[in-house]
Image 1 (cartoon, one colour):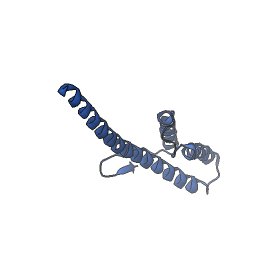
Image 2 (image 1 turned 120 degrees about the horizontal axis):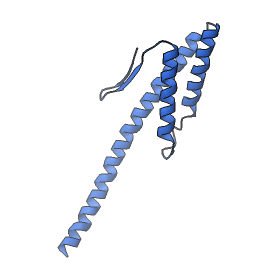
Image 3 (image 1 turned 180 degrees about the vertical axis):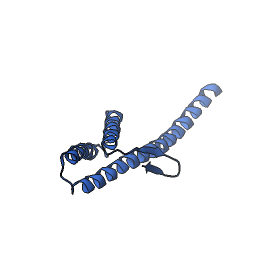
Image 4 (image 1 turned 60 degrees about the vertical axis):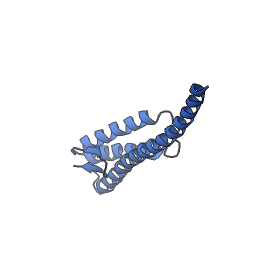
Length: 121
């Protein structure tokens, strides 16, 4: 009897603690993804604006790549926490970002630290 009662109490306590830990982890992970996506979007919009002034062929390819990146970022499902292809889409965005940086001759390194995220050039 004591074993059964102890099990039930432990199970209830563990479930409650697990929910709280899961919420904290989800909020932290969501904030990291949001920060990363925000940096990519700011980067892409800034470069798009800068390259808009030059209309040669080399810049038109860069602008098309930036347009593709911006489109991917704008279609990213920020509101849908149950989106099943979230990691897949995030990897595509990271790949496109690396491609754009390569076209712009920029070495980028997106780092997530405990104090803040940074994008270095």
